[in-house]
Length: 448
Image (tube, rainbow, N blue to C red; front, side, top):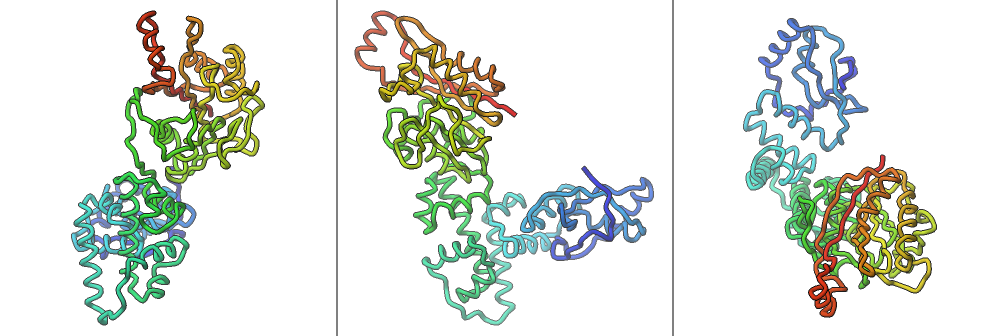
């Protein structure tokens, strides 16, 4: 919401002005509009600093009319994004930039603000190839107008070192001095390097650890670069509520009878988490959810199990309360519990898989009560015993609602060949005309 601010309190930074000068016609139009309406359209300023992002001509018109205050929208924006944001607002309503002004702006966004060709192409509505050509012409022109540069060429071994220094907080000027090259050269290298990291992950669909090996960084450094592109994915995202058979992916999780397809977990996390979110897995099995979370952009997973299969899974009995030393309010809880005697993992009487169906449902309701907010994802299939079918997805959904969860989605996943699909069972199903369970339900609840 716009608020009135004193024009004298506004901070005018000439380096953010995306034009070569004021447009007198625009100023006169704003003055005439104010004289007839008594107000200006709200300008845009950076929250906290009052640095002007958009509205330069309105401010100039106000000054000439000796108006002391103006309405301003305060925008949360990083310093490095101010110039790009100024262009976005100008493009929507302002006087169009000349070609020369546009090209100069592209050069400054690249060399001074560190924007990549991919980001600039999206911002400017131009092809990535044309953006690169404009940047190249700008760098060449700058170099030709200065003393001939006798500095050394960068090697392939230099590039990851440069990236690591920049990720560590050194400026492009400092890195340029270290390597004996120009700052525009460092900017160009850094821009191309980041775009390549994103391409390897989002287009070539490598895992983060594979990208790290390819470019000479560690996984955390790759993740930091990917965060600049929002939330890129390295897999096919589902767009409907019927999901096909994904198949297991041995790159995720330790070998374990309860392992889920990684693409199932990936799609759940893509739909219901965002960068910075925390995932809780109280029945982690082989650790597929942990590994998927690590491979996505800027997410963290806490994992537990009654019988941990690896060191990053902590011992925990789901029947005893919420997991110890876990976040009080995880953003998403991923529940793929052993249910009834369908999954036999141990002889432990505390193992949910060893309970009769009524006891299991009673504990299920208690488990659903552990968390006061967030997203709860429950994987469940129906259960047949002695000719009787228990609709566990229905029973689960009912207990979720009873515990304050609003059901926001219900997905069905074809889980393909199941362990019970033996020749004998298939013959029995044909002879006695019963159906084997070949799908699971993914029930999504939300509590605020």
